Amino acid sequence: MKVRDQLIKRIEKLPEDVLEEVDDFVAFIQKKKRAGGRLSWGSFALSTRAFDFWSDREEVEYSLNDLRTKP
Image 1 (cartoon, rainbow, N blue to C red):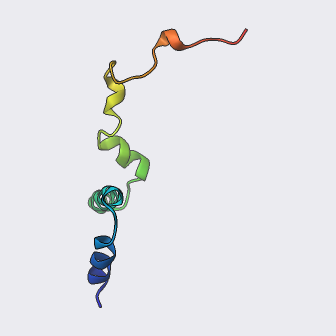
Image 2 (cartoon, rainbow, N blue to C red):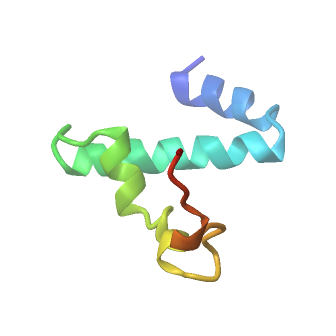
């Protein structure tokens, strides 16, 4: 059996929430290959706009007023 066939069988048994992780990893591998192998997982995560919610003030749970210094 080819690796592709084995992989498909294993993927078909995974729950939906795990499939999202598999999809993210496949996208990472594809982008890494296009970059000639010069891509880290961290730089990939930043390039996918996964952290864009930090730019939206309404999505950020804390503000500068929440910061306190210890006496």
